[in-house]
Image (tube, rainbow, N blue to C red; front, side):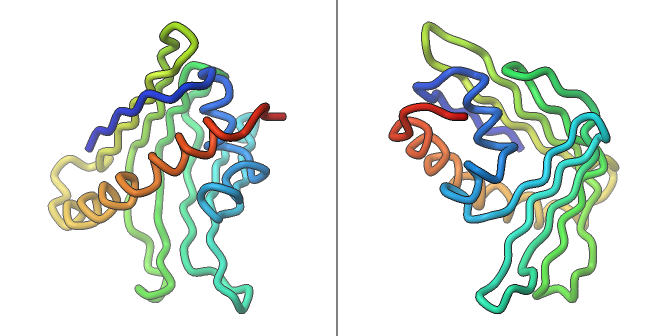
Length: 147
């Protein structure tokens, strides 16, 4: 799965909005833990009772601020599926600066190309990103400055 989106912000701001709870809490309604030094990224969505609805956890394989974030061993846990892990996946966020804007390219693929049981989940993930990427763009374009 691949998605692309042009955002009227710097590539540094785009990656920060994907990796900081200060920002993901506004446009994605999730808590984010990002620690590239210890190779960790976790996105967590809680329900009204404080329990987890969804958790996505990944190893940060490579990170260059403002340019890209490459994730490996990405697993998704869904409370509706008894928190049985779904994955693993590779995920890449690549930012290409373009005259004051950023072309964000996102790619997701199963780590095991011969894992057909993951294809329905990738389709569901694609639909989720199709909904969330415009929210990311809207958040960035209305927020004056990221910290």
